[in-house]
Amino acid sequence: MQVIVSFRHFEADDAVRTYAKEKILKVKKYIERPVEARVVLSVEKFRSIAEATISGDGFVVNGVEKTDDMYSAIDRLVDKLERQVRRRRDKTKPRRSGGSPENQAYRMNVLSSEERERGREARIVTSEEYWAKPMSLDEAILQLDAGEEDFLVFINSESGALNVVHRRKDGNYGLIEAELR
Image (tube, rainbow, N blue to C red):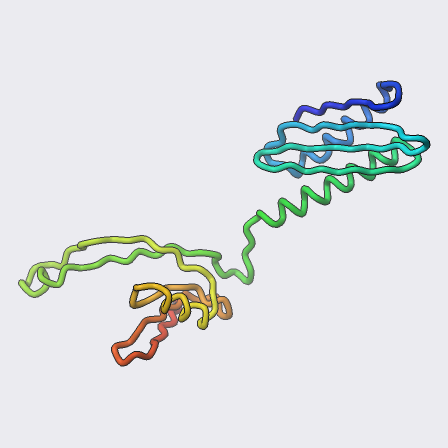
């Protein structure tokens, strides 16, 4: 990661520059592909101000801290940036709750009935891949009503099991709960 430290309204000090670079590089461990960090250190009257912008792969994190001491401003700035980067990383990290899978793929094969009637082995006419998403039974019924399919495969968010809800010929709904043994 490239760290650029610039000074505004006071003399450039190598000790402060080195300290700022070392502290900003500690944030690198939370970022997968950091690109650049720009740090601006300035003094206004009696306040020391540390500003930083870290650009990563598709995101930008900003922070500003004002204190009486430049070193404490840098420390507080780095703490603020670490919190922002960790919060962002935790939001994008996939989670697993209770051992149930987030999304599962399933394949629907449509078999030819004509081949079966002639005594031959059935063959696959079309094959489509779908994703079973976690949702409640009510959400699954609403999604089934919104679509044109006669069934919907989903992961029951309450039980974590793979379920199928289907539209019956009498207008009601059927539920198939799969159990793995």
